[in-house]
Amino acid sequence: MIRLVTSAVAVFAFASAASAATLSDVSGSVLVDSGQGFKKVSATSDVPVGSRVMVTRGGKAMLAYADGCEKSLAANSITTVVDSGACAQSSQVAAQSGGGLGLTPTMVIGGGVVIGGAAAIIIGASQDNDTPFIPVSQ
Image (cartoon, rainbow, N blue to C red; front, side, top):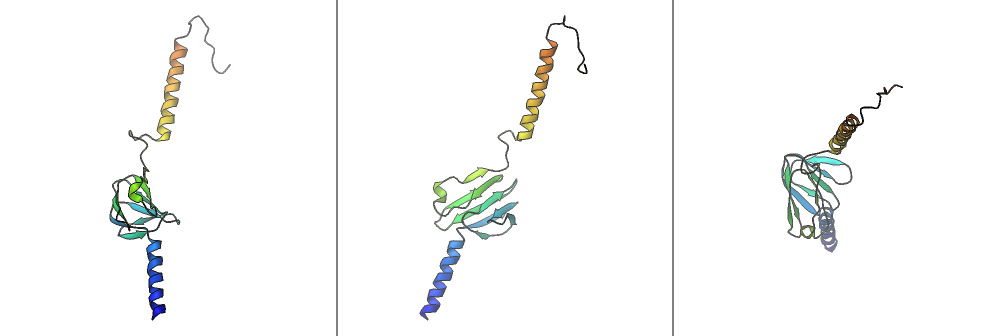
């Protein structure tokens, strides 16, 4: 009988340690990566320590920890599930926004190239007109 109780306690302790938090109120596209790549979640599920929860555009979810801490996960964010003290630290980061204006790095670099080219044309056009025009092919 004692072995049975000890085994039950060990199984319960292992199960509790395996899931640090519970993901609930899932709506929209919510994905969890527990070390095997991101997988879509659509219902309440246990999430182990170290897992990353990604909420995409239009999605939301609630992450509840065993210590009573609850975090509302907003759209366009990634949150890492921590072992303890989740409410004391900010582990939610922007995942899909390119800044407040929605700019991507490609847009910023492309804009710089366009502006630089326009500046070169303006500078070239404002140079001394006494210099003869030399075609680029020579």
